[in-house]
Length: 156
Image 1 (cartoon, rainbow, N blue to C red):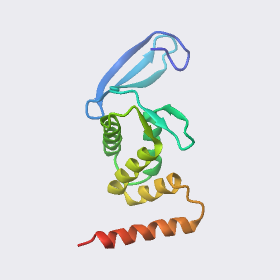
Image 2: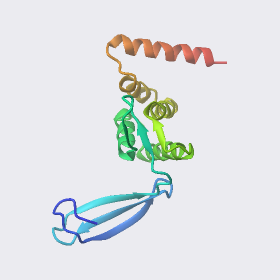
Image 3: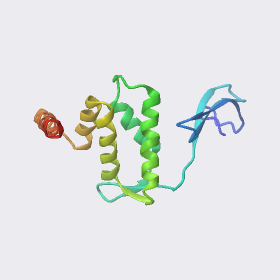
């Protein structure tokens, strides 16, 4: 593993542990040249996934992009890191289980929306505001109004 700080090709592993329900390994490393410390994460990838963007461009699925989007929506919300990691792992497994190599970004966005709706209402609205391109405060009001309608409609 090459050091991200000095580029030296020899690093040592100080600690390894399982992460994400044993679907990955987190390794604590240090560089033998500059002594910098850094962390790497290895994950099992069953199928190399591609994402079809709105503009029809195709790009490789980026686990970190999904994780960053969720963390941004959940910023300062009372949801622990373990729970966030479980949601991320679950979403990735669901995507891989589809058996498709190319998945429209719309499908991924809808899956994230569904996961957030069960996890945290504020994060759900935050994510929706970006995902659905809210442009004015009235967009928030309309969206939340639809949520209230759905709650009363689905209540016993």
